[in-house]
Image 1 (cartoon, rainbow, N blue to C red):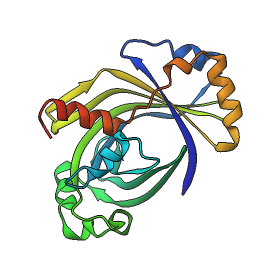
Image 2 (tube, rainbow, N blue to C red):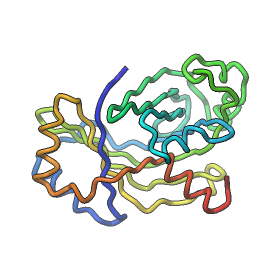
Image 3 (cartoon, rainbow, N blue to C red):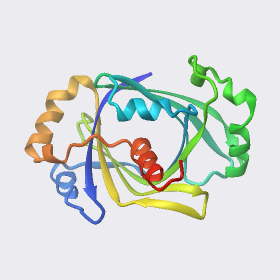
Image 4 (cartoon, one colour):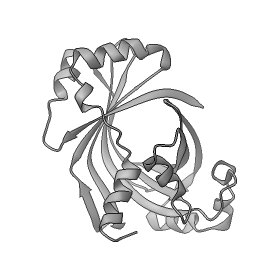
Length: 215
């Protein structure tokens, strides 16, 4: 299980000022651009999302994730936990699916709901949201800090045609606990403090469609 710290910085769409510290820090691109697809699962009472909204110290998100097109592509079940300031993520491969409809059918099967990663004394999980965005990956040469940049965030109401756009760019810093001082200095030196925000794609997408009457 991976332990790390994460900090998010939110920019309005079209604001590319974050590129300045990418250049000054000599960040290197470490993966090709990918489309990230996430289906979030929660209880009928939306316990996980309300735990996040209320800022509980121990909280989690459960999602199915795959990258780019779902055409005989591996999908993964992820449990992402927040314990204080520490983020833990546990990932297990589910299977390959020929298309989204095939995956959607799998989610509704009883054997899927009994997966040991998602039970954790919680019953009646259901699909809440399908979110998609474009992700870029960068890392400092010293490998003390990794950055992801997420754009073109879509919340699907009826995949693939009906969706809501969230017009934000999310820059996320990811690093090990032992590199905290280094990263805090990086944030200070690049005047990023005023950009640091709590921003959960699941929570903000949930609130967006809740306000529009879709949940």
